Image 1 (cartoon, helix red, strand yellow):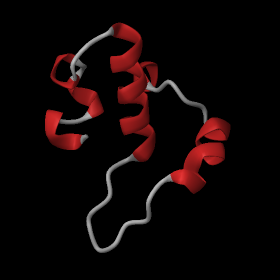
Image 2 (cartoon, rainbow, N blue to C red; image 1 turned 45 degrees about the vertical axis):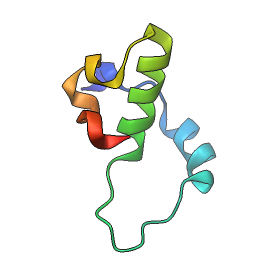
Image 3 (cartoon, one colour; image 1 turned 90 degrees about the horizontal axis):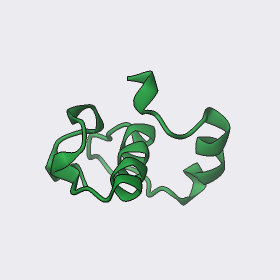
Image 4 (tube, helix red, strand yellow; image 1 turned 90 degrees about the vertical axis):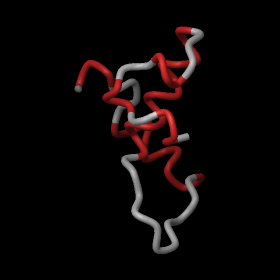
Length: 60
């Protein structure tokens, strides 16, 4: 999956303060979801057309 990740660790650390806190809900991997969003926007796709590695369509 490393070829599907768009953000480096440094970039993630920079934007992490803007993520909401989990309140008892199981949390998904933020880096995977943000990378999926970037992939979808850059390629003009719908979430369901993105690789399954980014998560199911109900993720976002």
